[in-house]
Amino acid sequence: MEVIQHPLSGVIELVPRIFGDARGVFFESYSARTLAEKAGIGEEWVQDNQSISSAGVLRGLHFQRPPYAQAKLVRVARGRAYDVAVDIRRDSPTYGQYTAALLDAERANMLYIPVGFAHGFLALDDDTVFLYKCSNYYHPASEGGLLWNDPAIGIDWGWTGGAPNVSPKDEILPKLADLDSPF
Image (cartoon, rainbow, N blue to C red; front, top):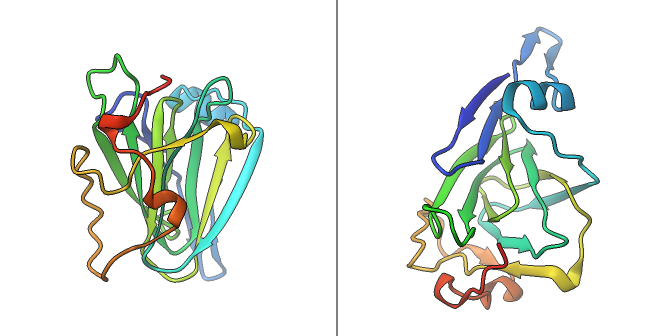
C-alpha cells in the first residue's frame, strides 16, 4: 500500500496494490494492521456508511462535534469523486485551509480524514458509490458543517457541469468566519 501524506497534518491518502488478470482484479480494501503499521492510523471503526450520487451532487462540508467527533476513512466503489477535507482545528497553522484528492474506483485509493476536519465530496460520475468508515456513531445533535463555496476557504471543486446539486441543509451551513470550531 502506498501512503501519501497530504499538506494538512493528519490527512493521508492510501493507494492499495491492485492485482489484475483476465478474470478481473483483487485488492485488499481494508486492513487495520496495514493502516497502523504503514500510516499510523489506529482508529476503531464503528460505523460504515454508503451513499450513491449522480454526477454533480455535492455533499458537505460536514463534521460532528465532540464528544461524538468522527475520523473518517473514505473511498469510492464505483465512479469518481473529488474529496475535500478542511482543517477546522483552532490552533492549527493550517486552520481554514483545505486539501483534496480525486477518489477513483479503478485506482481504489482512500482518504483518511482525522478528527478536526470538515469533509465533503463532489460526485463526478453518475451512480458514484461512496463508502465511509467512521470512528464514532452518527449523532444528529452533534452535526456541524461549513458552507461548501465559502470564498474564505476557496475550494476549487473543478466542476464545469453547471451548479452542483447541493441539499437545502448544506446550502445554509455557516461560513468559516461564522464557525465557532469545537476543535
